[in-house]
Image 1 (cartoon, rainbow, N blue to C red):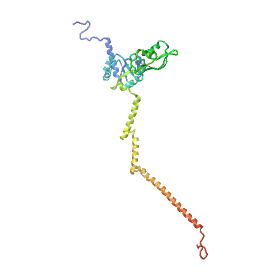
Image 2: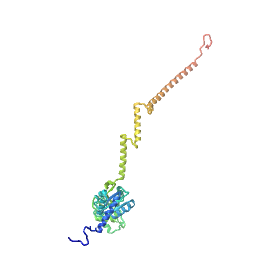
Image 3: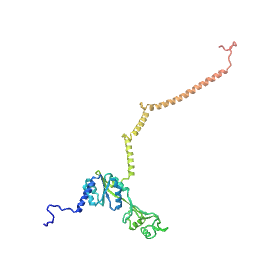
Image 4: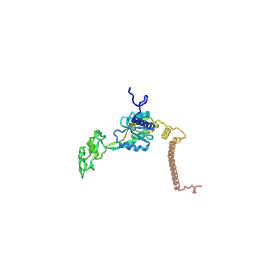
Length: 331
């Protein structure tokens, strides 16, 4: 056996400085991940560095930190941090960055990235997400080689007023088509940025719950409308099955009172609270009858009075009868 000079038996060889530094970095990152309440995995493949730096700056004051290193280092740190970290590490398939936070939830971080996307230029070979149309109008480009570049891209360009102008709307790429190099150059000349670029979130974990990006992609307006609809359905259900709650008790009581009133009117049942309802029809009939009888009595009395007056007038017009002896009527 060949002896190694300066190496003693049972002595472990010293680790290389780079390897030892890497090990310390893994331990440091693992400790930070373990102490965080929220851990998020980002896919930074093809992401412009300026967007990543802008995101770091925006979230710096929100107790949030970006952990950037080689994938191998990040993966080991995640695995060493515990069960939650292992679940995130399993999803690491592309160049990645880990974000940790004490205050923000996975949804807060996802929403921030979604709302802070920026327009970027097209690259050769990219798939058009929608039809790319160059609108008609004047440009700031002077006549020259730029005119040929625009025409090579399929743009209807010409010289007008000493500058290059687009004669009519020109579709340079349709949805799903690969964008050619000529089109990319022409779009850059015209300062047209057809794509939106932003940080892509893969997943996040908080309190041992894993949230995939698809779950966090929520339309807030649709969510609000769904909540309103659900509340209305719950309210109607509680009313229909007569399940009293603080929200529906007034509705239930008013409905019950109306039903009780209807029952009393139909059945003629007596109770102290509803006696007026039962007597009301009879009282109305009484008033009508009294009014009718009163009119008849008044008419009869008037007729009798008129007849008596006529008789009195007739008697007053007759001459006095004399007795046979020539004397007047004896008193």
